Image (cartoon, rainbow, N blue to C red):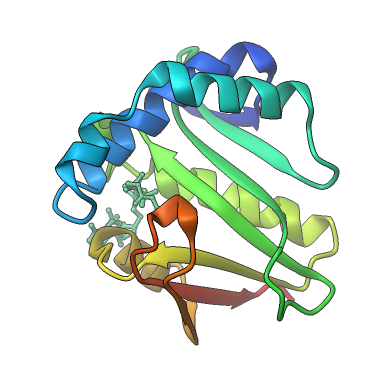
Length: 172
Ligand SMILES: CC(C)(COP(=O)(O)OP(=O)(O)OC[C@H]1O[C@@H](n2cnc3c(N)ncnc32)[C@H](O)[C@@H]1OP(=O)(O)O)[C@@H](O)C(=O)NCCC(=O)NCCS
């Protein structure tokens, strides 16, 4: 079925929150603690996504992969907030698909769209952080041609302080 990439609207918040929780619980099983994953709730994520969509931050974009009017994935981009980032550096803050949509080419389509938008907006470089243990996503970024840039941290609260590594791509 055809997948269309479009900008998210506030009415997408619940679908995005649902994808978020389901994707974390599936993809991070064995990487983050079960009790944390099992405690994630759509309601909690919903308020975060609802607020973010109703109060968009300048230069941030939320994209959804819409398949027959059903949201099967989302991606969030904007300027890098890393302390060492040069001006003109963007970040892919998140990309998550509904687990039943993994490995069907939806991620590639969503990712390409979000990154092309960054290029069109004049960003010259893009980075992303990924759990060091997230082999599935790391292979996806490898195939997309992104490279580890050597930065690592255990200070990402969104990753529960588990080790994360940074990937980088030149958008030139
Ligand atoms: C990571 C993610 C966005 C990738 O999207 P996807 O739709 O599953 O990936 P695609 O089907 O578009 O894959 C594109 C190509 O990347 C490569 N690839 C993707 N996943 C791969 C895997 N697990 N192993 C090896 N190669 C992989 C393949 O070359 C693939 O092309 P192919 O299927 O024709 O061989 C998606 O799997 C996801 O949401 N994962 C869970 C959440 C997550 O970890 N997000 C990243 C947080 S930093």
